[in-house]
Length: 354
Image (cartoon, rainbow, N blue to C red; front, side, top):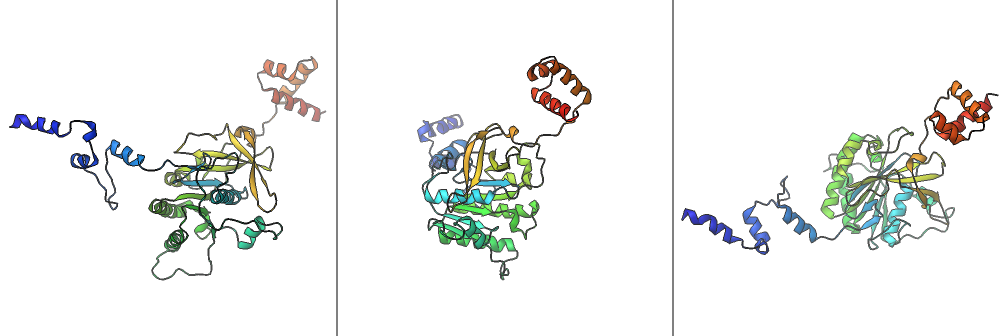
């Protein structure tokens, strides 16, 4: 009888088709209790369950997909709020911001504006406070009531805020939330360690209601001679762990009117808009809607601040001598093993010293 026991187990599953969820539940312990920390499944079971859910659709090109908690971060006064409202408006109308693809169907959006007053908002979306832009009726804007105290039953402002946000989500029935901005919420302290607990609560809300979230955040002071990286987000190491994707806005040092968009983190796609393929845009207001308008693609290295280099007097003399011999800038550069652009700067410095 002992010899026949293994054979009985083998005959229990004759083909892969018989490997049903019910059979798997008997073979391998599964944890479906949401109160438990670990939910154990076989890899095949994970794939099977995932296949029953829809493929995430693009909300703002490769930058933000459905179901993601995405962070948009940048320095102050670069237009984070302008772009965020434009993205929300595009989602509610179903009209993409060219050239960034919008795959999702038109749907409601809740924009939590913790930066502007309603009058400042009006200035951006009207023609000199007249001829207001007409948003869709399911584009909602929320702002903080700073005159209200935290009521009994809530230990902290965060708890009250999250409860209020959850109520707004349920009442409006929206699936797309934009938070502007994360660091401002904590009594304007701008401290990343204070923003982290709130970020965790936002992620819990996202999971509970199957939301797509765009959260705006600031960058601390950064070296403008270096490309923007995930380390430039305020509290980057902590906050980046809680987001699915992130992108940033930079300012061109070549043209102060230019802004560029760059991917920083992505899970649902490959990196398309890295340092060598940034999206250059200008902020314009055609009519009554302040917005980003795409200009072209570029390389971030061409738009960051250049280090000032000290020019060597001896090298200036050497360049001038070679130039007098009739050599071109490129010929001189090759001869001295320096870029021809530096040759040009040395010759200009020589002219100034005359």
